[in-house]
Image (cartoon, rainbow, N blue to C red; front, side):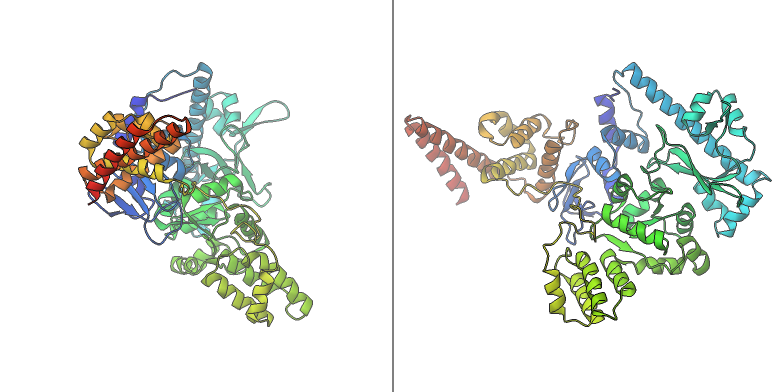
Amino acid sequence: MARYTDESRERVRDAVDFEELVGSRTELRRAGAQRLQGLCPFHDERTPSFGIDPVDKLYYCFGCGAGGDVFKFVMETEGLDFAGALESLADRFGVELAREYEDPRAAERRERQTRLLGLLERTAAYYVRVLWESAEAEGARAYLTGRGLDEATLREFRIGYAPSAWDRVLLASRRAGYSEAELLAAGLASRGRSGGVYDRFRARIMFPLADEKGRVRGFGARAVRDSQQPKYLNSSEGDLFHKGTYVYAHDLARAAAAKAGAVVLTEGYTDVIALHQAGVRNAVGLMGTALTGEQANKLRQLAPSVLLCLDADRAGREAMMRAAQLVGGSGLRVVPLPAGGDPADFVAGQGPDAMRELLDRAVPFARFEVERALEYGDLSSAEGRDQVLGAVAPVIRPLPAGIVRDELVRLVADRLGMGESLVNETLRGEAPRANGAAAAGREPRRPFPPPETGVDHQEKTERLFLARCLAVTEHGRQALEAADIDDLFVSDLTRRAAHYLRAHLEHPGQDLPAGDDALARLVAELVIRTGDLDSDREALELERLQLDKLRLDRRIADARRAGEPVGELAAERQRVHDGIRHRLV
């Protein structure tokens, strides 16, 4: 398996502008000589509990427990594994990576994938040239401009046109040195019944489907003529392309979604393009399929809030329910599109300003579901009102106590002609479901583990001692070098952190072992915590004495259990206790 050298990893870490990287996800403000803070990008909060050290390039949130180094930050915000995060940062900050030994078969697979991606990129560029330079593509250009899309935006999305001839891509790719097998693997060619190979896409508008890095993985192709079937044709499923894995325009919307804290989800390709042209740069789209779990993960990585801007028809409502089940959370909102309309048509007819106003009027998914149940339910009979009440109960019941829940209870009570107390009594009639998403019936997802609330006094003291070592680096190094870490520390995690910091106290963000998330998170927490600590040598010594006292308490307890004398240990404990009391006076 391929592995990048440690030297490569450290070159990437050194090259990263961590303040810029994190600042694209949340607004940061100075909170000390070497610390910045802001609202946590991993959970909803109103008061900042998230901090970064831009020099050591570590982050930690005291609210949800998220923490780690530059690579962990990219892994969690962009849904990448370690190698993917390393590659992404290397590409972003212009660092060349060196590989260690790679299994020949793995190297062969990597080279094959690189060639196929290159084939898709050159084919996408070819389709763009055909769209804008070919007389045959006049109808395609007319269709796109008729939907209100301009050339600059279409070029940004690399929209193209596949000519009607059966072998244009086939012949051009052969001349460039690609084989029939590679064309088939890339989804650009199909094999006929007679065994011959021909272009898969012909006489169609081509929408490149890219991953989060902007690499073309496949195409969505729209028919130009009414007689063409199917209307939409995707690349075949293969090693490079799985339509349920990606969301359309992920790469183009990522920065805007991070800045806005919200991502707008639409159904069609032209909807996304129209919204981007209208200035809604945080819009993405489904790839011609029902929302999948992998796509839901991509949405959560883009932003904490998801605005469902789906067609106002039956299919759109079903897509909303699917999104509620998979995305969930309080950040899910619905954009109230007019009945029968889609985002592209709305922008073309009403203009960009009206579209932005509509997005601003997005309502929480729970309210949308309640209002829909009231609108379509039979309110004229007692039986009908009971059915409506039964429909809204699982939507309202999981909501926490607060303004949103109270408003929905009042709305239901007013429309059904009931007292609020009776509605609340009905809601209490069944045990609440675990999910905060309407009708989802699933355990809500946590992007990160919660903070360790079970840390005992011993471990708290161990952590504070290590934080003091970081705050007073020179004396901290002396204290760690003099300490018998294995005897002084009880917690395995803080013991490992102490051994690590003994060798990396000046640059704790360097050489963090890949894969040890617990250690990285603790080191990050300690580094960020030092921003609240003074460079106080006496405070460091006090924490060392506290640890020593706890060590002696353990040894005295062990000696008593074994029936051994404890006089010398007790005298030593008294000397340590006197030292603590002296410093506290």
